[in-house]
Image (cartoon, rainbow, N blue to C red; front, side):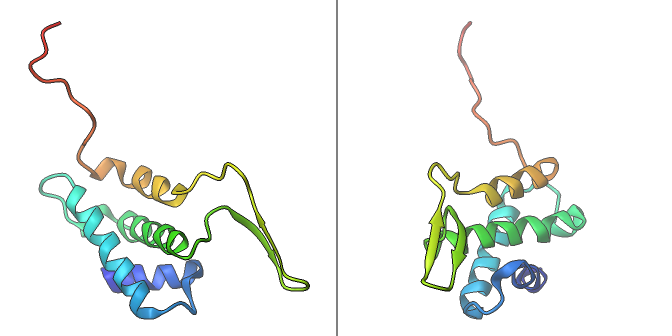
Length: 116
């Protein structure tokens, strides 16, 4: 599964990056999603959603590790970088978990043993 995720990351804009770094991020993204799958489900049970979600996680982590959060444009002539204020980092991660929501355990907050 990691190889499939790696191919997606490269297609989504990770091409030209250190392949060992990408492979490590893809492996970690797969592992992070696998840990949250509902009991009895595997990555293969999630149709095509799992590889895409893992690729989005890996891309988000890659952008975060490179300090590219919030960059909305880049120019080469006279070098100009534009960064939006208030940028919401982790957007791809949010999309990944939203895509995988039907397959993931509910890990939300639960009150137990609280008298009402």
